[in-house]
Length: 142
Image (cartoon, rainbow, N blue to C red; front, side):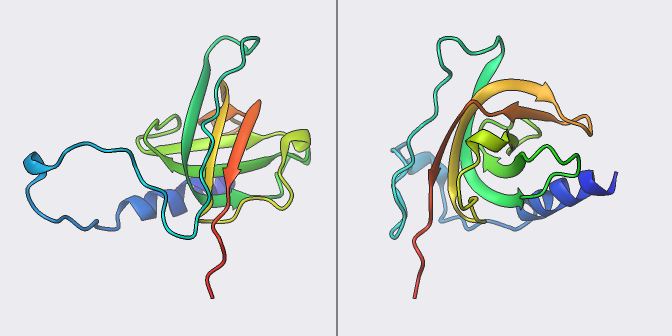
């Protein structure tokens, strides 16, 4: 139970931070999100043709990294703030198996796009078991 809280609490706290609003939304026109200065473009992950049934995609900014998994199988878990909301509204957990782990692992603030089937995690959460993973790292600021 403690490990479950260690993953979800930091992400849920970020959702409680009030955002900035510049007024009436009715006058805004939808546009493509522009990459932030100092970041690289993120390639969108897509489900491969031979993917297991129920393959889904999620993209977002990393808010938590579990580099050492408690069961010792060498996978990593990433918690993303994402529009897709696979795990909870606005949150997607990505399980990255050992052979797919990028070195070094993403850091908080990096952007990730993943694709894979959705399975139940060890704590009952819905998560993507990544078969495709793309990463856009934040550039270091001086």
